[in-house]
Image (cartoon, rainbow over all chains, first blue to last red; front, side, top):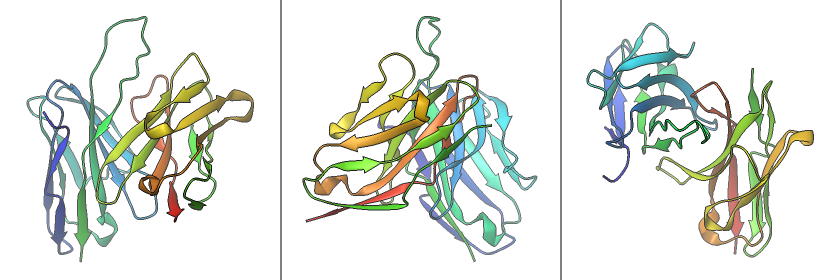
Amino acid sequence: DTGVSQDPRHKITKRGQNVTFRCDPISEHNRLYWYRQTLGQGPEFLTYFQNEAQLEKSRLLSDRFSAERPKGSFSTLEIQRTEQGDSAMYLCASSSRRDSPQISSYNEQFFGPGTRLTVL
Amino acid sequence: AQSVTQLGSHVSVSEGALVLLRCNYSSSVPPYLFWYVQYPNQGLQLLLKYTTGATLVKGINGFEAEFKKSETSFHLTKPSAHMSDAAEYFCAVRRGSARQLTFGSGTQLTVLP
């Protein structure tokens, strides 16, 4: 396993079109995150899955955005009726879950290379 | 609420000089703190993290950071810059009960020959 992969790496679309991105996490990781990064800014959290359950969504995730992780493995992020303001890098990250109470509950998030979306 | 402020969107240093990238955070509870590096057209790579314990944290590529609770800071340092250190650096915070990271706006590091 070489890490988190994302497809496509680049997407150019016209305003109003729908786009779908895919993320394949590291195989043993049960947590998956989507972030959006606009030019000159740090990544902003969009949503988070534990296995197939979507546990948290940011206010940034408008009704035009939907994310799924149907089998608890890969995830898709769909944007409907794209707008120019959706142009950004969409990053996926994954992490595992450790159950030991003696260890900090944080587990490193490994990031994919991102999908750069340009809406014309 | 929590936020991260990175002072200086662009920092330039000469090769061999000290690197200092500043990060201040606000958090209502003890945070977990991170520094990530991003090379062009690549994802983020974790440099180091502070969760609990020793406040001076050593990371990869010779970087280290010190958690100073009284100053709410987590500045990143490297004694001697290398050309390969040129990249964008992000400070991030995670509140203990949250899963997501909150990132600063990033600092672009340029290393001059």
